[in-house]
Image 1 (tube, rainbow, N blue to C red):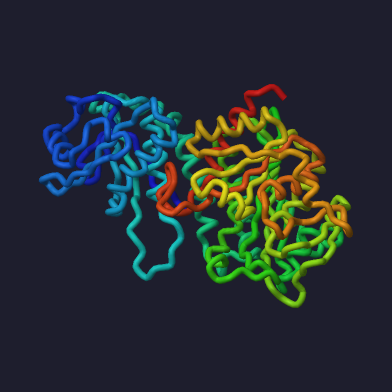
Image 2: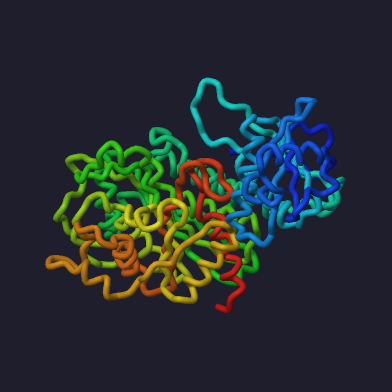
Length: 487
C-alpha cells in the first residue's frame, strides 16, 4: 500500500485544512476566521480547552472545510493522538485529494504527530468494492505562515521517522486486512519473499517437510490439518552496519483459524483471517527498524500456517514432540497459536539473541482481562516489563504487564507428557499460555505481547480503522529505549 505524499510548503488554496492549536484558554489571534470558530464553540456550548479532546469542524463560506484541534502537551500521548485522529477524520471522511495541516504556534512534536496520524489514516486498507473510495494523494504541512516554523531544508529529517512508522503500521494492517482467500500461507510467503528482495533482507524458509524432518512436531501438528502443506517458519535477517545489539522478533501467522476439531462457532470464526496479525506486526517492526536505521541486528521469525479441520488434523489427546524434545499433550485444538510459537521460539533461541520479543493474537482470556484498548505483556524480568510499559506510554500504544510467576505452571502438569498445551478450565489462560511459551526460550531474556488491541471497533489512539496495527509504534519506541540501555 502506498502512503500519500508528504509535502512541506505553503498552504496554498487548501480545500481541507486542519489547524493545530497549542493549549490555551482562548483561540490564538493568528487563527484564520477566529470569529467563526468562536461562534462554532458558542453554538455547541464548548470551551476552547475542549478542543483538546473534542475537535470541531466547520464548512466555510467559500465551500472549503476546516477543523480545529488543540494539542495539549501535558496530556498522555495516547490522548493527544486520539484527539488528532478525531480531527483528521473530520476531513478525511470526505476523501480529499490533499489534506493540509497548519500549525499555529505548536510544538514540533505536535506537528510530527499530526503528520503521522494523517498519513496513517489517509492510506486506504484493502477492499474489493466496485467503486473504491478516492485516495488522498498528499498531506501538506504548512511551513510557518501562522507562527510555527517547519524549516524546509530539514523537512526530510523532521518527517522521515514519521513516514517510516506510518508505512510500517500500514504494512501490518494491510496484510491483516487481506481476505483469507488472498492470503493463504503460500501467498503470504510469496509476499514476504518479495519484500525481503526489495529490502535486501536474507530469507530462509523452513517448509513443512523440512520441519517434520527436523522434529518440529508442535508446529507440524497444527499445519498437518491443511492439505496444501504450504505452511512454513520464515526467517528474515537484517544486519545493518554498526549494529550494536541483536534481537529476535517472533510472530504468530495463522492465516485462518477454524479451531480444528474443536471447531469454533460462526460468531467466533468470523474474522479469523486476522489471526496472523502477530506476524504482520513483527514484519512491520522489522521494516520500521530498517527505515529508522536503528543500530540493531534483527532476526524475524514468522510462524505461517492455517488451523484446519480435516481427517489429518491433530486431535485432543495427541502427544506431539516439539523441536527441543519437549513432549506436549494436546488438550484443545483451538489453542494452536502456542504450538506454532513453541517451535518458532525454539528455533529463534538456538541463535542466542540478546532478547526475544514475540507478538500473537493468542488468547481470549486477554480480551476478557483488558478488552481491546490495551495489549497485555509478559516479561522475563521486572526491568524488561518496566521498559515495555514506558514504551507504551511514549508511543501511545498502551500495554499492561501481567504476572508470570512459576506457581501458575503446575496447572499444565501432564500425566502422559512433559506439559499440557493448555487446560479446559480456562482460568488465567493468558498467563498459562505465557508460561507454556517460556519453556521454549532457553531462559533467554524474553517478552511476549498478547495482542488484545489488534482490533478495536471505531479505532484506537492514532488509528481510525478497526485494525490498529498495535505493536509497531510500541516496538519502535521499545527498541530505541532498549538500545540505550547497557547490554
